[in-house]
Image (tube, rainbow, N blue to C red; front, top):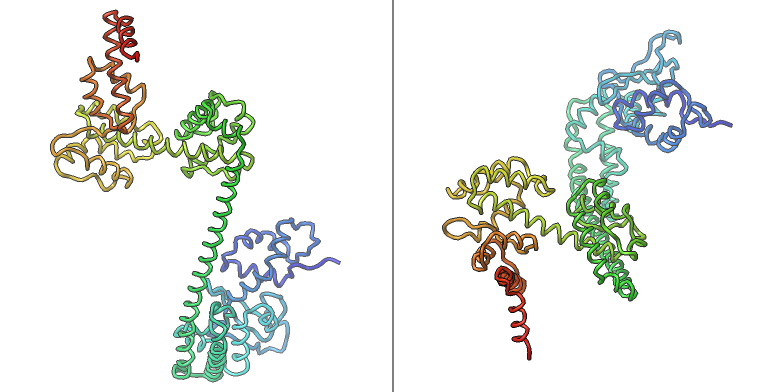
Length: 509
């Protein structure tokens, strides 16, 4: 036998209430409800998703709808004077003629309807049924008095009708909460049963004061519970991290000799370097894969990772500036860690290099305006440049003059860029401007430097002006530059063989 999911009266009640409720799922069902007054679980017009929504949420929707209505204060209850049913008005929900009319209004927009007593009992909230009884049996003005009372004491409805009020109140105070509820209910009922023009302030005050105290206790208990929950969450997260670290340590310990050999091999390191260089460029995924196809993978890596998986890593780094690849369970964790570590190192170095270049283009080099503009246009092209507002590049054309006049870096610049400029300005000499020194140098840069200067003293001066490398690296770099000029001089004089033979003799024990 088919089961009725929604009766016509329930359907009309939801339709009338829907405009006051923020329920997207119910709103989506409105066309279906308007077209079909009765809805059964066997109805062929009922989509599966709508059937599931009605079965799961129908009771909650009706309960929420019941709180959207209230009795009309100026005429909550009217008895039709006629004894003829044909003269009676009809209930807006069940459509039956009713002699005893209850006028209810939608709180949200003031829409009024007439409801019979049975539908009030069936559909309306406990608060409205309570007022209906008093209005019918004792005092026709009870609703107006209740509205006046709750306007002055908005906590009264919460005390009387909200079963979830004070959810965190310790059990030791529940007896006090019941005392507040019972005392408030008796006071309000006594006030409503007779027409009155003054509020029962004196009678209510002990209960409302006690309720304020209980509310404070509830908030304190809620805060304690929140802190306890946070501590539990922190402890669980710590345990999870410890377990993950233990698993990682175990995996690292269990690495085979073949894996260790792979990670230290030149082909693996070369591939890792090239992949990380592509990742830190933040290329569109399609372009990243095109460039990736030109990177040869060692045979051992081809069995472990493919372009899709590397694309996932690149996308994750683009969004989060780190790689965890939790979705890629079959990719070795050491490979993920290596790609993440090297990508972050390269990204940090790229950002520092770009900051150096921008500072030098704007301040460090004695360039004309056109030269600065051309260099700034170049610096806008890489990913780092695209993260900076266009106004910054415009400011950079005149920032050197502004700084010379004692003005600060514009406050409208991104905070990271302002910090980068502040660090480079802090090491400037008392007079004049010098370029920001880079902390590394490439072979191409050294070659360009050597080709631009006639001898070693000149190139050494230019090098010290532009670069500040670690001591050991700097010593090797300057030695290589000096040998370059000596070999170049030998080549020009065609004495390479004589020089080489003499050096070999000097090196003999």
